[in-house]
Amino acid sequence: MSNYHIKHLEEYYKVYRKSVREPEVFWEEIAEEHFSWHKKWDKVLEWDFKKPEIKWYQGAKLNITENCIDRHLRTKGDKVAILFEPNNPEEEAQHITYHQLHERVNKFANVLKNEGIKKGDRVCIYLPMIPELAVSLLACARIGAIHSVVFAGFSATALSTRINDSDCKVVITSDGSFRGNKTIDLKGIVDEALEDCPGVHSVLVVNRIDSEITMKEGRDKLLQPLLDNASSHCEPEIMDAEDPLFILYTSGSTGKPKGMVHTTAGYMVYTAYTFKNVFNYKDDDIYWCTADIGWITGHSYIVYGPLANGATTVMFEGVPSHPDYGRFWEVVEKHKITQFYTAPTAIRALAKEKLEYIDKYDLSSLKVLGSVGEPINEEAWHWYNDNIGKKKSPIVDTWWQTETGGILISPIPYVTPTIPTYATLPLPGIQPCLMDENGEEIKGKQVDGRLCIKYPWPSIARTIWGNHQRYKETYFSTYENNYFTGDGALRDTVGYYRITGRVDDVIIVSGHNLGTAPIEDAINEHPAVAESAIVGFPHDVKGNALYGYVILKETGEGRLHENLRKEINQMITEHIGPIAKLDKIQFTPGLPKTRSGKIMRRILRKIACNETDNLGDTSTLLNPEVVQTIIDNSF
Ligand code: WTA
Image 1 (cartoon, rainbow, N blue to C red):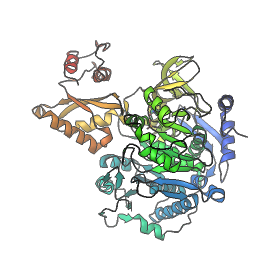
Image 2: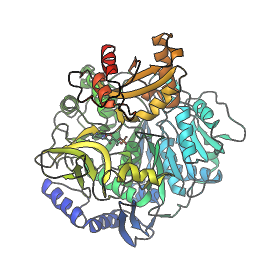
Image 3: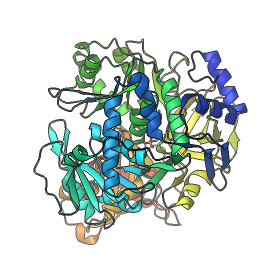
Image 4: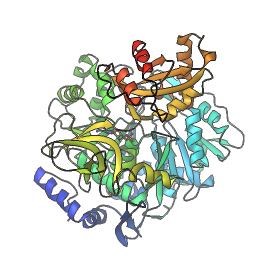
């Protein structure tokens, strides 16, 4: 028997050792005992980090939706699969059972088929957090289409770049979305994006906000009538283990976003296994992850991981501040949430508000609290532990990435003793290591370095869509034979890991990864801008905020700086989305550059953080005099 559910620390160590000693036996047992297959694999793992090439469960045949839905019908058909809590607390919640989910996914899958979508085709999904979002992912998976979800806060330009990169044929969207007391015109954004997307032949529109929708003849269709006429039986497409399941874009430090490709069997096994253990999931639990399905957290731990375990997973359409700052806690009480999984930025925002917002509600159903997306600072950890968990619910500080598909380093609740700010121990199957700048592994305890993973796990992304070379360069070339995470970490005396943050030019703002280069490119599009550089600086709610240094062209110099700041942020909103707006913009006559012309961001970062006492070595600068000018004019 495999150790599917780890219950105490000794067992963790035993299972972990087995997973390192005999990884293939370990992952074979789990796959064998907990999933349904049309055909078992010929080989558990084949890998080569040099090429790089990674294949799990080769030869196996399956459909992930049968594992997430069909196989639960006999025993759990009337159990709630998706519990939808709308933006407006006055609107009734929806309880969608496994039977109902089955019917909705089958109908939706048939609609996609009728649109000509076949196995391997790409479908772009640009929807708010409504049930159709989860259903559309599963409908794609039912017929073997590859879904590419784009977070519905991205701009038209960002959307069209993503649609074109993976050559999507269909876009699924809604008339609009509710966010707090605002509505957002999603269909309008899609229309604008599609002006640059000749490959899209149809747009399926969900009616969510009852707004006037302009429909383009021959391209746009309302979804509901199509669903009403669709058959509720759709034979699942039998997929190979390594067939792509989805593409999800993530920012890189340079260039355009990277379409990370996740495949079917390994992703399913790993997200299901980690969901069970990291959230100590038990049959009657009501699990709530507040992330958006537009990010990997939502894919793996709202949709696939929970449903593969036959769990009840909550989808929340709203925001934590509407109608007031008690909204999360009201939902916890109302649905008797047992696991609550959120981001440090949300915790910090709520910690600023009065405790009365919490005290009004009964949170005694909670058993496990989770955190994800960025390092959780000590103060936020204690606030979460004291006021939400009442010191009774363990906090799982889960470290992972879009690229890793599932959680890699995390406490197991009621098993791993926790320490604030530590993601603690690697989960079974995960072999982390720390590297120095020369590519040597740093062994031992109480050391820090760059975090790498030595050995493949089932849900590692297999490639970047259309650019395997970039996949190789980004993740497998910095440290030979290792997957490089881009994060720094330290390992303490008991082997616990603490993630210290990005070591590349990715900045995490409110839990969203933002590459500096795409933002700089957006700013440089402004006619008055000659050059720009972005760095992060600490922010008490967002974790990091963005500080931009901008050199104006001569023609721009007479202009009012306040207006220019607004226009620059407008430019960023149009190219990327409001999440990438700058908090501070400093106009400067120059930027510190090395003799080879590279901007020395280290110095700019220190100035933005007000740490100008020790700027380090500036002797290699071409223009050292500019540094003082920048300091004198900084915020
Ligand atoms: C950061 C989110 C510290 C990290 C699942 C990583 C974290 C990046 C943690 C991936 C954590 C995520 N502690 N840092 N618990 N979780 N990160 O792709 O820098 O949106 O590389 O995936 O977020 O962000 P992504």
